[in-house]
Length: 102
Image (tube, rainbow, N blue to C red):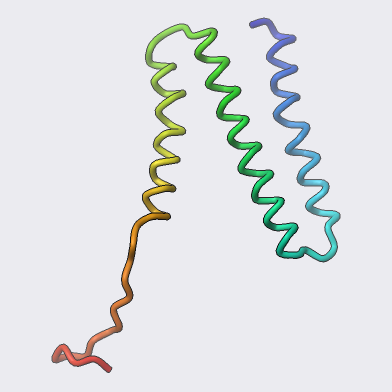
C-alpha cells in the first residue's frame, strides 16, 4: 500500500467518527429510540471497522503473527462480551455474624 491509500483509509475511518460526535453534541432531547439507533450504529460501525482491518491484513499479510493477532484480538473481545452477557449470577443477601439472614 502506498501513502495515498493509507491516507484515504484513515480518512474513511476518522470522518464518520467526527460526524457522529458532532451530531451527538447537537442532540437536544435524547429519547430511548435514539439511543437504540445510536447503539446499533456504533455496533455496525465497529463491526465494519474490524472487517476492513481484517480484510486488509489478510490480503496484504506479511507474516503469520499479524494474521493471528488481527483474527484473535476481536475474537477475545467478542468471547468476553458474550461470556459476561450469558453468565447467570445470583444475589445472596448479606449474612450476620452467626450466618443469620437479616
